[in-house]
Length: 150
Image (cartoon, rainbow, N blue to C red):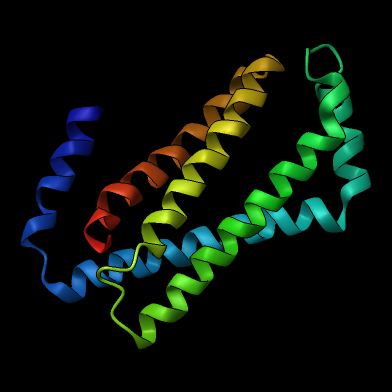
């Protein structure tokens, strides 16, 4: 699987500038949608999320930290979504080469996903943890794609 993933990136150098721009642009839109929806849901339905997470982590070492961890995750998800949205909007008007916003968006997305993955593993929700892996790979791929923007 990793070989296929790396092979796909070998073609990146042959894409024209618009193709590279569009890949980064659509990635920023994707991350904005993903993290704004998730983070805002944690704010607007805090009680529902807190009830579910309290039960989910009831037998884990994190059981007494659920309200704090929910706040941390919500804040970092919203921040990541805002950075993704800002990156996408700015890309429509200015050249972001040399400006690290897309890379920082992907790095914060990866950090968010590692925190979520950690929580799922601690809660022994292995299928839930496995479901995070594809998103994490997208964030890592985004870091590779946007490193040229830094």
